[in-house]
Image 1: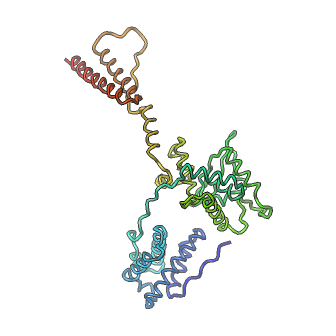
Image 2: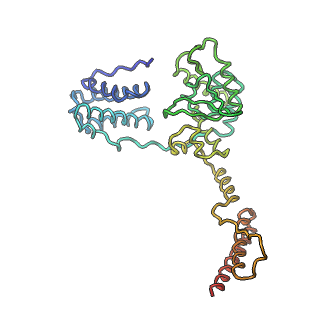
Image 3: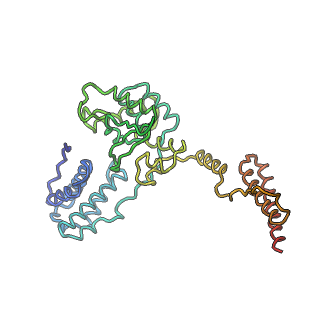
Amino acid sequence: MKRPRFPLPTHPLTKFFAPAVESVTTSLSDASVTSYRGTVRLFLTYLGAQYPEVHSLEQLRRDPHILGWLALLRAHRPPFATITYANYVIYLRRLLEELAWTQHLPDLTHLLGRDDVPRKAHHLPRPLTPEQDALIQQELLRRDDLLSNALLLLRHTGMRISESVDLSFDCLRLVGPGQWAIHVPLGKLKTERLVPVDSVVCQLVERIQSLRPPTAPKSGLLLLPRLRGRRQMVRNLRATLREVIASLGIPVRIVPHQFRHTYGTEMLRAGVSFAAVIKLLGHKSPHMTLEYLEITQQDLQREFHLALSHPRHMIPTRTIPPGPTPRADLSTLIDSLITAQHILEIYRRNVIDPSARRLLDRLANRIVKILTQTKKLKAS
């Protein structure tokens, strides 16, 4: 059943915008329908208050009508978040494009442009610190109720909170001998996925199943029962985490979505490839994933020294094939010098002592000079 929609204001242009909303949101979710209607309500309320003489679409002008509305959005108190401001502009722009097509008014498409949409703020990764992560998990385990275990499930699977409330009762799937995955249903990006899980997550799911209240619906089973609706379940999860944070005395604001940042960063540090992390988080673009992964100097040092222990850019080791003793000629000498140069470089890269590394650098330079002179001798 669709949620009730807020009524649009009484305005001469409502008869045009209401059908446009229905057309644009035909295949969209109820939340999107509500957002489009909210945009229309805000825009028409503004027009009615500031420009009551506007009674037709032909009267709409970028200056002053659209620019005035944009100024109203920017002046809102408390200020709109960038994404909220951008969505209002995008929704109105899409509706004007629809009206330009249906009402044969091409000038409407020029009232709002791409430059009017503010750029999305660059979000930095927000994983929990190891101390925060340990304290929160310990408190959730101590509480051991339905919502606490649901939050632990979020932490150990990287799911969005909206995905967790849609999990089916039988979300655990056996994908191989001793291998389990949790089926994450269609979510924010209209995709579904199987997230590999260990025995800890399997126990969490079983614990949540056992904690379902007796009054939970028996048909269309969901893992988290919605006794008062989907939205209320999301609110309850957020409220539970706030209570946990307050009880622990953590002074910063922490939201469930940070579990997702923590999970992604944890997977990357455990050696999971970047491409696999994208799949685990259910992203469509690597740019989205980069906003979730915290790369510290410690991570860079670890990866750098790992690369030094397996240098890829070095030439393959030259081996002397079995057979008779190598001939004592310039070609054999050059091959031997090249091999020594390669072995010395690999050894030097694994030496930590700075003084020893400097000595090896000097030896490497001498080999380069000897090799150069030997090649000249051969050429002559």
